[in-house]
Length: 193
Image 1 (cartoon, rainbow, N blue to C red):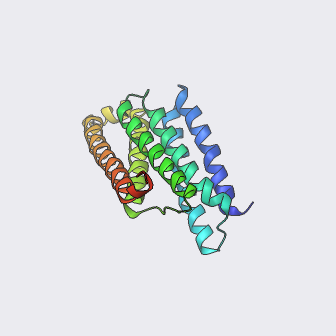
Image 2 (cartoon, rainbow, N blue to C red):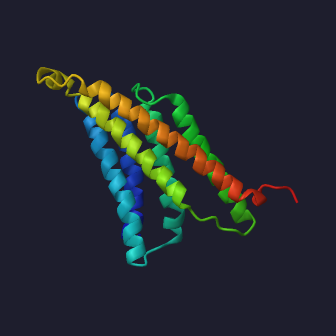
Image 3 (cartoon, one colour):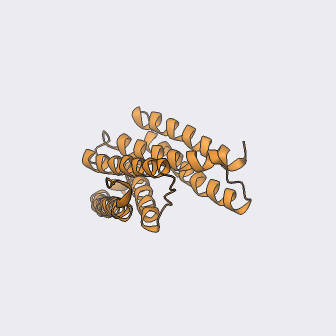
């Protein structure tokens, strides 16, 4: 197994540990979850970079890299729901879009067509990951709020929460928009002939 594929498998393992860490309450577990998700995000960047730069693109990587990305983001959105920072409807929209696009790609493959990723979809993924990282940081900062209030920055948490709502809004718009445009662009695949 080459290095990019090892990084993909490592990202899946990190995602599992990340979900476990977020599922239990212990000191600084939000901070640990933030660090783990950040590491997973970095591996996502480098596995693709290394594979393209060194011509290490494999069938395993083509299949597993985007699949692990979807598992990573879906798991994070779901794990953030009980923490009270991510509305369940946001996770449902994100996951539904991913199932829809994956289904469309499987349909295309069945018809001998390969559907590439598009730039809007890449922006969507960046905003999803950024939103997840932001709320993980928000939770990590909450672990230190007693200290923040003592130094007179109690305004920070409400401000961070409103900024987070802005991130959710952009993420949802890009998720819905990119999904609908992708389906519309490839609508011939689902039309009966």
